Length: 346
Length: 184
Image (cartoon, rainbow over all chains, first blue to last red):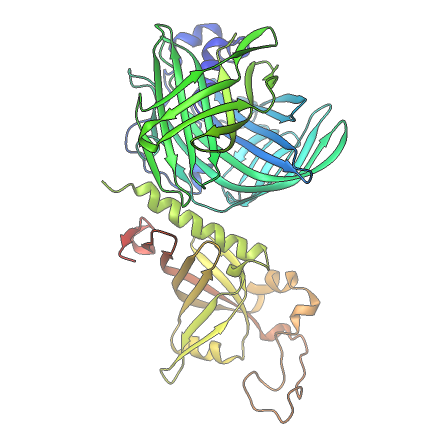
């Protein structure tokens, strides 16, 4: 998940507030830039990289209640920097914000938090792992065993997560290219969490369990000026394989795509631009926007030709940075569940 | 070209299992096999409980009664191998370690965290391993002065994963845990 925030950074008033309008055109000045062939250092790289401009800890989960009802859950902590590096107290240039959401077949609940860095109200520590903003947190003794909690005005959740497979790396050993001009990020995931816990909804408590996927990504570079939006998919297939695929929509009508096929043991195959395609099917009117909540996805080299349908078409995130994000159902040559994020449908 | 991050992720998985073993008594990583060499040069192995796993510094802790045969063995040969088999993950973790026997004030905090019900493991009379007439012909008073922490400084970690496609890697402190793939 990805470059989504890059779209936000370029397009949204809240980031204009955070960075200053003048900063939007020169966003990489002074910041470190991702380079090819990264060598990650764990557990340190589970923590923040303040020399890079943007970073996130992005968790999505496909859940099921005891009656078989499907639910979706999102928890994301974003870091964005006014300047590279870290400083103590209010001198910290780091800004944190977070999104939490729960999707049911009928409803979609979402809320957000903001915090300055340096004063203890938000941050990430690598070992033991702890990511938090106010009372929201994702923490555990390590990255493989986590407790998650978040609350909004009308919903909340308390979950436990247990990794059952390895970390996986996208692109070329974690160097994920986002455009033909070379924009890129560092990108790895833990897509093998078992998750269980309790959703707090206006209708009451619901005990759920399922599978979760956590993305780690950081960069300093914006999308290409030619790119207007982003469609990102994470699919967990019944055969045990998983697929991460994204396409960036370009203003000339073309796309830039990439995908990672993840086998049940965590072995990966990366696919470069063009191998993975995402074709929007019928659009739905959501929050006054026309959003394609049904898609045809193809990855010919894996014999994948599936339809992806939103569990709830109304999974719009009506936050300071608006976008669509929700659980999906997969049918066709492969079946399964997953998550879809769409940005740039303003 | 080999992807070094896959080695890092493999090692990260192992440390997560070790951490889980410390936290969760239901984890198979909770009870490693702890192998030493006796003063007579013979191999000895027994099950222990994993009490601490610290990646920074790369050590694991095991608690013991200072008067057990394994401590005598470690005084003669201060090295131990730990073996863990995780059936669900189909992962074998083997660690070769140099063992420091920590006692006295240095283990006061560790002793303080041990529940009273567990402290009886450190003070068995007669001494562990000695012959007794009847099977319950012993006492187990908690004796603080016989409590020790075996701090096992990891020199080498060998991981073997027996999933559909087997893989094996070896990591050494001497090369800062960069690791290398080995034939499984």
